[in-house]
Length: 178
Image (cartoon, rainbow, N blue to C red; front, top):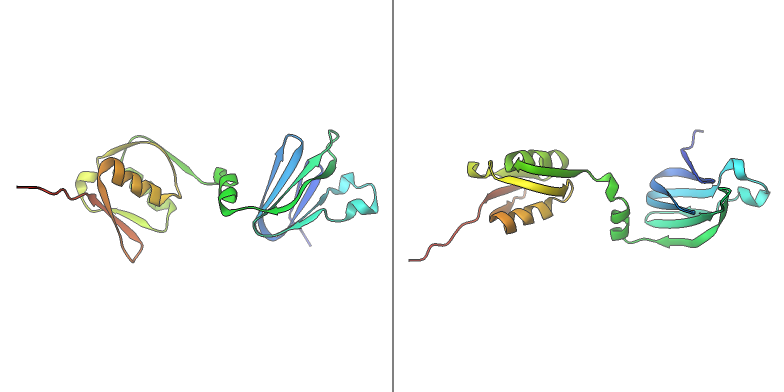
């Protein structure tokens, strides 16, 4: 009875139990479906004929369509037919939704607490000497593996991945030779 409709540049995008993104660019509207289905058609205010009332496209999981529009704001034509997008392209286009951390001389203890708020796997510092280690930079909150790899390469910190979902961090063992 109460559909969810996004209207952009003369286009209606109607949700049908779904997750999707509508992006208005210079001269076109891109619609990408991440989950479920959406119907894409001209908005009700710009309909002039019965033909205009039909859906331009039905999109499903992992599909994208670009619709060009005229300077008047009316949808003009399909720039391309519905196409499948790879998971990488989808992630790239949705990267704005992922929180990013910015660190400037932030203690590893604080950084670990921040990552633990955003991830199911939890980081644990096994050695208190690691707490004061300072980090600076930008990191995606959802890229825990890359963060652990950074700690390994830049700070010689080992990671022990446990079955219960925790990742134990400790200084790398150094070999001594006699």
